[in-house]
Length: 355
Image (tube, rainbow, N blue to C red; front, top):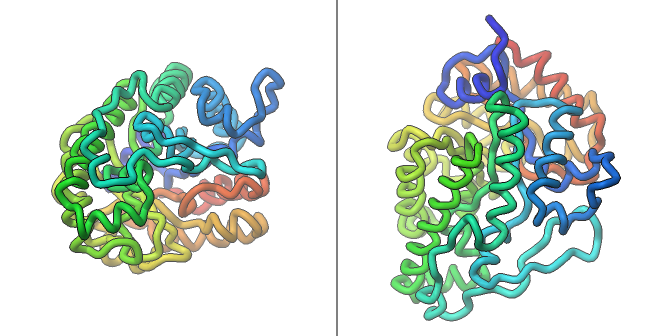
């Protein structure tokens, strides 16, 4: 088969068409800072989260050194919600993303006070747009640019404390849904702006679609309608739902793929959550593109290159048949993960992932 570009390879996997080889992707984020050698760039996690040019340069440098098939824009959970008054706090130790500090919503009435944000000026959304524009200019569509964007209900748990959102699901449904409506419009506008800036797909953070967090009934009421609206109103962009939890709602995500043309896959920690990759391939592999295969918490972080190769070989044998598979870790890369393991993942992916 003629060698494909990374974008062609990635899209073929999403559409269950046969690529030349399995696409490879990383959830890199601030981990990429360790690969920067440019003394003109600040080696600082805060600067990474607020400087789109820096983010793009770090992303590009990592891709050129390690390889793989995606350029993934990932900072922290505050890029949208800072526009609603959320304040971030800086970690006391290096290599940790900024975390949520002061929240913008605490009382039921606060949901109605949220205004639709402008992705061009509000929060740190312009940082993502600047990074996407710079990467698109450099790579000219040859490598797919991905953006890490939280879903409507996930964003709600960033603008308000998680426990507040869960309580309001039970006691203040009308107020919460007014807030979700505003958030949904903002998230959708942001995704369209990212797409216009050059992003090819989103890793759409449906992190609350996990059964240890919400019930199926809760997610169907407070998550599904807004997710489907976002997919419908972002027709030029692919979406891969990312679930961090240990019991991802594959039932719901697979229905997304059946009902839409652009929600194509799921990303999850297949080495630590249920179902594992084998079961997911058997039950959902004809509908969903599975983005998984390598344990980011153990193998990539503390294993050896030989451990990484063994896991990649197993993942490819398990899931690449019939396409619909992207080799990836289950979530963010641990900043302490050895360089050799990153390189081993790509090398093994090219070795065992040929169609």
